[in-house]
Length: 275
Image 1 (cartoon, rainbow, N blue to C red):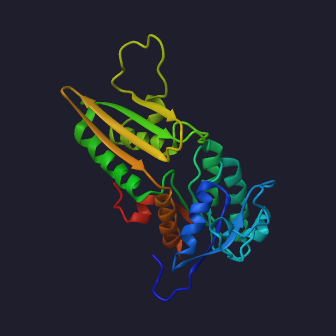
Image 2 (cartoon, one colour):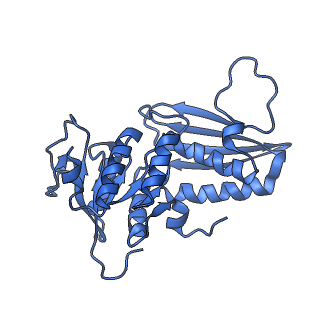
């Protein structure tokens, strides 16, 4: 948390012309302890050269550009909700310049995750597949539910997102699966089932199933079902605005002020005790 009287944190935004980028910029422009210092977008984006606040009819003096050095020149923190390849490029630039990083990008492979872990030896990074405060409360509830219910309940995870989402299952659904699997003493890598078709045979009680829905403009719905004899428990989270992710990202920016290098999660941002 920022200390009283401290200067506002200078924040750059990657993917500035995207849906999430614009939400982050809007949140920064009304924040009293964070300011927009840079706006980055991909080479060839039609938004390059525009004022970052143009979509709101506002002049911020921050021009959207593709030059990393220029975009990060005045930044203390970069918020990145883009794609794995872009985020990893930004990661190297932030590491070289000592700029902290808030990562909401999903879909990293093992090598990408390893690169982030290596960079965290030099800079403070907060990484979470979902920065909604509500989602992270749900993750805690899932851990408690799985531990209390034990092995007698089948677990199925259903998630829905807009038609433009490119990875499946969502990073949030996978994190939910990892939380439940960990609480049950399993490895998600070994017990996840990502699709069923044809004659599948009886359900293996040790598995955790995933179902993915893509369509329309759904921002993000997740439901974890614990299905037992005679009852079904469902724990759900439904997003109606990306503003929740933006506010969570700004909480992460505040959390990182003065932090030592390391890789942090939303549990740390929200002050949850380790389980």
